[in-house]
Image 1 (cartoon, rainbow, N blue to C red):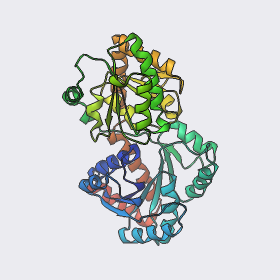
Image 2: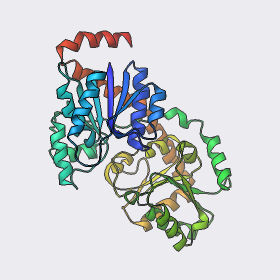
Image 3: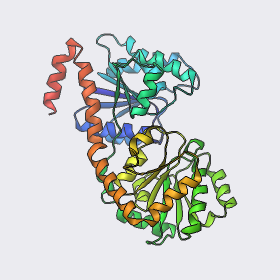
Image 4: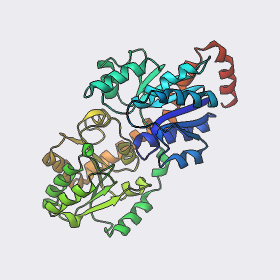
Length: 386
């Protein structure tokens, strides 16, 4: 089975890391894998190639460029994939129509929506409605996103499904030693309580709220330290805010790191303060690393933490409530351990790359089976890789 993933680019991000895991696991299932990037290959393109994927790029320029459809169609005719798997509406908007120029049988189109953006943007909702006509399955990474897709009538209910993201749980099992090295490199003692976050330093992530909350925490836990892992446009303004709050000597700006699991293992508490989220991989990774979580009560985070079964929550933007939750986990070892243990088990049971890839493979197979000309060929291929 030839599967081509279509993305805007393979730049560093949660969506792109999901695609890499789908490539890795898909290849293990016998898929012939490839990636089509609309704008640029991105920093992770070499990793995709190392997994065994062919990487193509049509170099789309900014704005609506309908000529991109023709460029994609030419790539599809060359590769002849059985399945096109698009990620985010921009990819579907161009790749979906391109499949209509591939002759018969055309590739099956499975789409994944990784975030919420239809209610807030009428133009995006229109793009979604147009694009969804060209996909056979419209998958969402959380129930919250699926509800928005249905409410905005982007796709009919018969097409919509929820497939949760997955992570490679195994790589977190032996990360403790790496966490100790991270602390040593940053000059943080093994017993010092560390609050941390990982993610792009951008306005939507609201790391400013985390800095303000941390300033409240150190009033009662003065030995605590804060670690921000990531880079982005808000870096300088966040450093300035840390200075204004006079906490700069307790805050570590670690920058972008290619191995975030090592930094997670250096933390006692993980905090995510975003004002909008779908289903962030970093929460799953914190769970797998055995780090208790505090998160803002927005979007898919509410669903993920399930009434605070798997982490503490606070109202978005409320640094006082955030500080209270952080202090609770730093000072109550019993609560912190209980959350860490139950969350790790939850991740191991429900959020593995094996489960995620199998769920998508099921949709590929079901849709390909509706094309009689491919049914026998598909069954023979699956039998070979069982």
